[in-house]
Image (cartoon, rainbow over all chains, first blue to last red; front, side):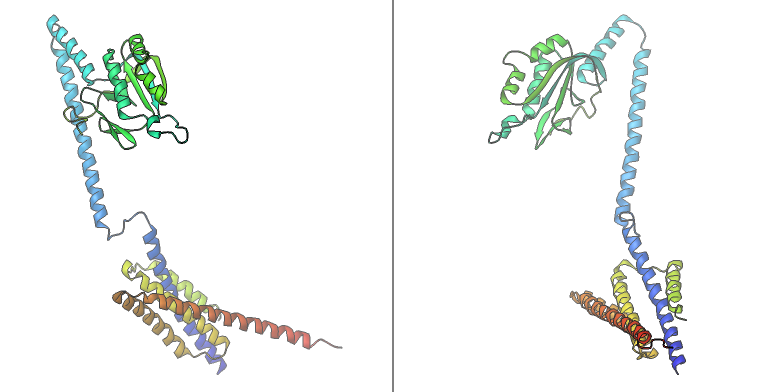
Length: 239
Length: 125
């Protein structure tokens, strides 16, 4: 009798253990699947669709960029083919100059660099006064262009005729790029003229320093490299 | 003989991993409740066997019945918007700990008996 009870006990325990183990394994697998890479379960079709869309868009973008490059290089080739007639070469030179002013080409040359940084306001003072605002950056840029700068950039973004410098909350928007302090403003042109324009007594930098903004420079730099303006000429800075 | 259930457990886990059975995510919570119920029943069975009051039919039926009812309770709770599965978790959790406590006590008791025997019957020449 005792033996039969023990056998029964062992048998039923074994059966139950098999079922229990099976269930635990299932649940464990389930948990593993849930904890896997972010939402790639079969039910997540929405995410997969979006991912596919993103990939397609990226591809289209890359193709368009490639096309643009092809066209640009073709135009350059045609321009070179136009022969050596003197008036043509003059026109070409003019075109090149205009392009530099319009910011369509990468340029390099001597110039000045000035950096605007938010000042630290003493306790109880008006913080507003110590921040670098969009109009401060604008004033410096206008001063540089007035002094004959041929190309100006803010933090590596080229400033062209259609560029705008706008305040958008804590940052400043330049050519639809959001940039924050410190603002590294570089200008290519006659370094001496540019520098003296900025360091004018009671000029823009003096005003900024008087307000408590951290201004370093202007320093003369022998070669400044600037990238071309990227973006649409028609609508940049229109918002 | 006593290792047979352990081997069975390992076998069950192996089958679970080997077969490509998948349960939908929605039913995952029911399975976890069912596992809790099954664990409770297993410990209840071990306790019963230690207390010498084990009944195979009660044990097997209890195992499957508890498991199914626990899952059903959780399902009904979801349908009604009441967290009924919490009731199952609390009930089975409390019983699980009680069973384990009883098993521990019985084990200590047995060990104590053995030692007492050794002490009470010292070898005399």
